[in-house]
Length: 254
Image (cartoon, rainbow, N blue to C red; front, side, top):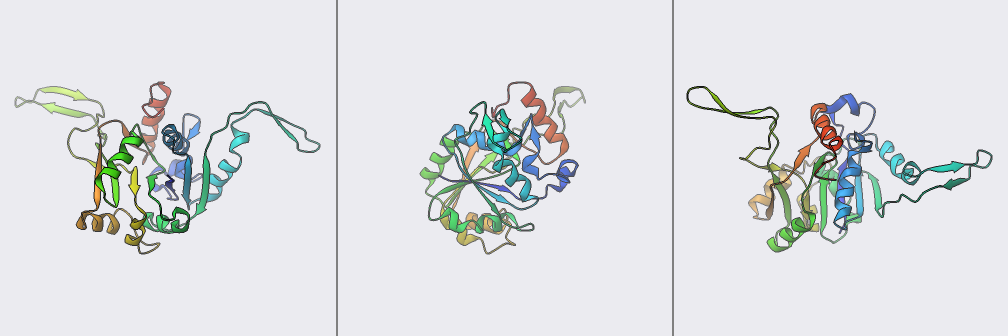
């Protein structure tokens, strides 16, 4: 099953990084966040990726074009340019990189991949969020539902510390940036039937609006409930949260 990753947005809310590089190339540890996402899918045996590029697409293309060299030690003969690799650190991935336009919306990026996706069920996620979601269970939930689309419903992490205050104004509990217990949001990590493409009109279509709203009206949107770790990377602060988790050595998505 192919995995589509939307990797073309400008990431304006994290412009401290994205002025120079596309958001999926912002590093967590010493690897781009898109590498972490792909590694998680590959853990479950899904390693056929389609990257829908846009903003600064050339940087992502160059990264994967030079991926083998970047991830191995080597010696080089500066007379003839011949490389001799001193290791074999390779990822068993097939990566298709498609420039889907600078200003194309999320739905439009998917639509532009129609010929590559073909008439098969596929997965889709965003290039800026990490989770320890069980991909096998996600796919099984989709198959069982019989619906056109499945999204992952997650608990967002609170942006600030959560207080529990008694009637006498005493604070009885404080949790620093906990995962909220109530309310769920779209966490990405979709499984989609090829019929989803008929819900998308063109480049201007925002996937999270008309297509998902129409799926709801048609009773064709299934929710996979994920209670584990999930964190987006929309701001510098959220990038630092992910960095700190990675450095702890206990990253849930590792």
